[in-house]
Each structure stands twice: as C-alpha cells, then as structure tokens.
Image 1 (cartoon, rainbow, N blue to C red):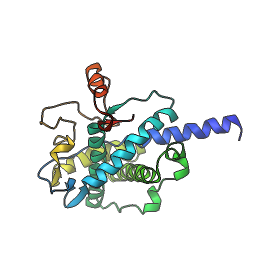
Image 2 (cartoon, one colour):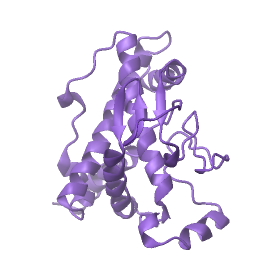
Image 3 (cartoon, rainbow, N blue to C red):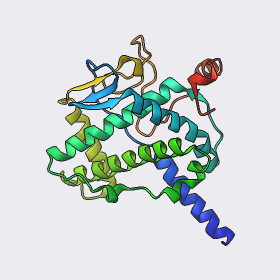
Image 4 (cartoon, rainbow, N blue to C red):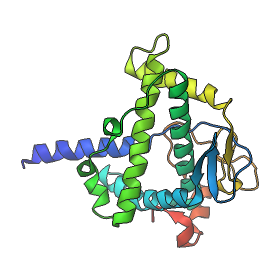
Length: 233
C-alpha cells in the first residue's frame, strides 16, 4: 500500500473512532431494580453489561488517543461508567422516540460496524473487550442514525446536520415523559449530567464529551486513585 493510501485509511479510522464516543446524553432518573444500572420504561440495562462495556471502553481509550495522534488522559473509572450508562440509556430512549413518531427501527445491517475499521484498537484488546467495544460503537451508530431519521420527520429537518440537532432536541423533550430509573452509584443526575454519588453537582456531561479531566485539582485527584479505579491507564 502506498503511504498516501495508508495515511488516508488511518485518517478515516481515526474519524470513525472519534465519532464512536460522541453520543449525546439525555434522560431522567428514579427508582432502580436491584442488579440494574438503569431501567428505561421497563427495558433493563444490567450492571453487568454496564461494567463490561466500561471495562472495554477504558481499555480502548488510550488506543483511540494513539490512533488520533493525541496524548492519553487517565480518568476516573466512575466517570467512564456514567458515560457508558448514559449512552445506553440514550440509545433506548432514541429507539422509543423513533417508534412514537413512526420511524421504523433500522435493521441491524443498517448500522452494523465494519470490525476492520476498528482493528487499530481491537487488535490490542482481548476478544471479550473487543466484542464489547464494538457493541458500544454499534449502539452509538444506531442512536446517531435514529436521531437523524427522527429529525427528518420534523419541519426544517431535511438537512442531515439540522435533522440530527432537531432529533436530539425531540428526544430530550420525549425523555421527560418516560419512566427512567438509574442506580445512584452510577453518578448521573436527572438529566444525565455527572454528579458525585452523594448527590452534589459536579461537572455536567455535554454533547460529545468523553470524561472531563482538564481541572488540575481533578487531574491530581485521579492520579491519587488506585489503578483499578482509573480509566485509560
């Protein structure tokens, strides 16, 4: 392969990897069934699934940083788990919102990811982590696809960029009417902003955020955590 082709291919993979962690986080919060990280209108997201996806996500983060030519940032695992649960809640909310406006759920083939596109990450993961990482990316892709399709059913939603924004706004409003419960140990507020487990407000998770660590005090606190409580090491 010529160098130019290799660079182009690597750039496409990097763009895809960056997109996989750009899921917007929306929702509400309430009581929770034992063993569940979250429940969205009776659809249960187990703590086991949340922990497995978080483990894979944390293993993938430094590999994604390298693929994108960025320095790796070690974060608190608690924040990573909140991000993952938020992404899973958002996925189910978007599916329900799509059904409400008459958008058919896409066939799995419509949002399937090409494993070869992510080999720069998955080749250095265990087979279990690779499968969980790809599953999380797949859910992110389905969410993005549905947000656009929801937006396209609304006025001024013909442009794909506008449709994504309009779809996101619709799901945010739709979420207010959905019965959602989140385990308080996850550390998510009623709108899926990040809060500490005592309930005091921390740093809100914005659209496209991964896990905030720019604050020097926060970075110092993360550095003091045991390895098993960090993400991206």
